[in-house]
Image (tube, rainbow, N blue to C red; front, top):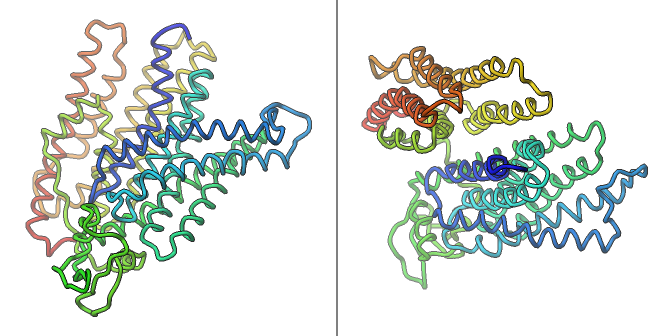
Length: 477
């Protein structure tokens, strides 16, 4: 690397994916966002776990004479590779992540419901992936960074979510050791198969690698969805309990109050309460058990609070338009939760992010590898308009979903086609500006702000809609 811009580009590729996934995971906690400081601490702990991992992996290689395990060899060494992949890498890495998560986070009183395991486990996984990425991307280049962006980084992040899912259940389980062992077993198997494919270097290896990443993604999202419903029941359940401490009855508590008392240190998972309807004595662990999800179908859905247009515009401008992805996710999630429509907001948004961001890096590699010079400007304009079209296409379908609900209660709302075309034009123009143009940065900012203004018309109508829904909660759903 010869220039500061190259180093910056490599740092962006190395650090960006892990941080972006950590932010996504943090905002998954809809009802009781975790303290930012503790989430950042989890992320840093995950990064710190890379160092003992590296030491133990090196020690493992020396003890079993596997220093040349990564070298090309006519001898496939299948037994050694499988042994090293599962024990020397998967067990070591997942074990270190588990120890840091269990030792420094799980006993914190802010870990007050099972869903918190998703947030903290995911943050640890993202921290580990980010620091590990630095070790690979800086010396090996952008190509490695792109491959890891699609494989190792989401692999670590969603393995962290899966591990956090089981640890969240373990904290509120009568058999915590069993849940913990299940969690470790699942992530070690996923990780071990992945690393076996990496070491195999066969023609089928990439298929198996991506298959394991997709399986981890599926299991992680499934775990998150299950505990998100669990969290929603805690937030809105009206079942009442009376605290029984030292034989004295205390005030009535609904599950949300119990969770808040756990966060404040006024209750512990083993404290006993009395169900006011049945008179049965239960511990907090039993109340927060997986069985609580059975109440989910009967919950009264509450509408979103909306988002002030000024706040939306500030966030859109400060992130140079990157907030579009979070706004997109938020809107889909609000309608999914309130109207019970059958979509997966997280998967749709992740797919949008991949198809709209990853091509930038692939395009750069193509220019470098194949030397596209003669038609560079034409290719670049076609490419940028294509990416703008992808984002506009995703936006178009989301606006149609929202419009279907808005037109039932409101007249004169935003026009789907006009908003989509306006967004596409501004997004495309911002992408097509030549970097050597005078005032390039200021012009880009102007186009991005105008882009946000176009979407602000949608946000304004959404705020009005959610306000009307909030005024008639009995009609929700």
